[in-house]
Length: 364
Ligand SMILES: *Cc1c(COP(=O)(O)O)cnc(C)c1O
Image (cartoon, rainbow, N blue to C red; front, side, top):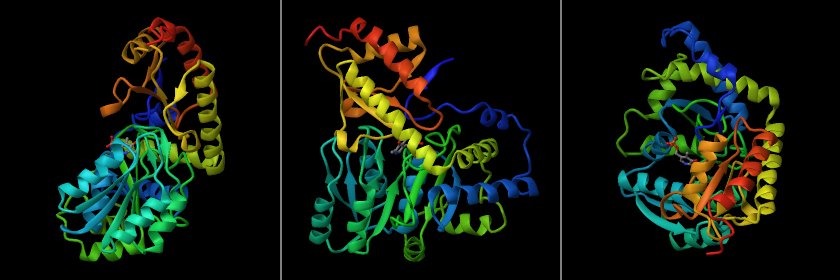
């Protein structure tokens, strides 16, 4: 079997895959109503929230677009805190719909600094919302969202968070950290195929929603809320992925949030230790290294594309490459959702063989 070690899509447990083989049901009927209601309740537990929560059919990026268009108006000033590819994407979405984006960028591999966010909010008192990535999948960095949120809330601003690769894997108490809209996607830590975005919506976000003027139709939270009251979704949902999600959420609740977080922390540490034992170094600032994805800096003659090809063809291990300006410069090991220490040991053992075959150690 292939060891799929990219940060999404992640492998799915057999019962989750089997759930997808189920015959279709009426998405306006009682069986689906039960599933959507149960899954929403279970997700609220895993988001640690009492806010409204919607399961939208679309990928994570659709959830980010939903977050923007539901609470913002064209011309609104938005502070975009970006530490990588996905932070930039969130900003691009807001900008596309007419927000005036004030970029606050940090060097890739580093985490966002709360003091810099405070200064930016002092300098721009009319900012309406702050966009932050909790876990930047492209660089393997987890922001200190608790501290960043505290700063955003000193100023009473809306906080919209891309938690696509952290929620359900890394602690993110949505209510405690006052996240107004938190977004995640089914194919990351949830052990479910791609196709669903899950978003929570705070009372403050609802207030903003009342006045928000960005164009919205498919992603409209008011429509989602009205239909959820009937145990439905406004549009035909990805029914099979809902079947899968329902089962995966049961598995997650059975394992328990604390255990899930501890497992991710333990396995991430094993990945980082393993990398060091091979003479490689992490790309991310060690203090903020992610528990769901490890990014590794290429060095010493390593041809990353060649290494990934040999890993895939000869060891059935699929690793992530670098995105955008990190292409050819870093590679990534995904360790979120369905992952064990054995999976990571296998990666490190194979790398030990493959690294020299791909030029590592030839010193350039
Ligand atoms: C995967 C990911 C996305 C994009 O999600 P899609 O489901 O591919 O649209 C956005 N942000 C982060 C942090 C991600 O990890």
